[in-house]
Amino acid sequence: MKTKYFLSLFFAASVAFSQPANPVIKKLQTKFNSINNFTANFVQNYLSSEGHDQGKSSGTLTYKRKNKFIVTLKNQIIVSDGQTVWNSDKRFNRVVLSNYNDDPTTFSLERFVFDYPPLCKIKLIRDDPASKTGSCIELTPKDQDMEFKYVKIWISPDDMISKLEVLDLGDIRYSFQFSDVKINQEISDSRFTFYPPKGMKIIDLR
Image (cartoon, rainbow, N blue to C red; front, side, top):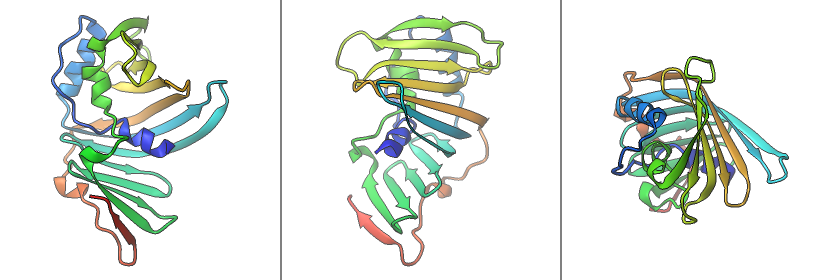
């Protein structure tokens, strides 16, 4: 499910990492280490291996450390408190509950920042930190055990990710554009629990 692929890009906890030598990556890591939470608007696009448009989605994201997140789409709200994920769908009037660590689509944005660079060849595509689009780097796996062929990361002048482009092993290209990013706001942990409205079907997979 394309929506779940998008969601998984944001929310798993990072593991221990070694610092790569690339200074652009180091600035990005330093920025992420200073962030407790952020909110953003996003637009996601899908392109087939032939370059054909396969769809587009947009919504808002609220993220907090320790795997807490809220993603709001047109017909869906996905919430995680770091242990349980609630995936609610207005079209079917249902919510699916799952354990965070059991979700096979879980895929971490922080892994792109911290874990993947030491496992990849790093190429600086554009070094223009003062421009609106900022710098761009490309990560190419050193071996064939990773789930993508390349990742391009655009880094804004304030050292935040402004765009990601992922080419998966099936030659499907996903891009994720972020805007109106706001960091380190007052966001209570209580927001990261979903309470199904009366009459909503509950499917508990935990």
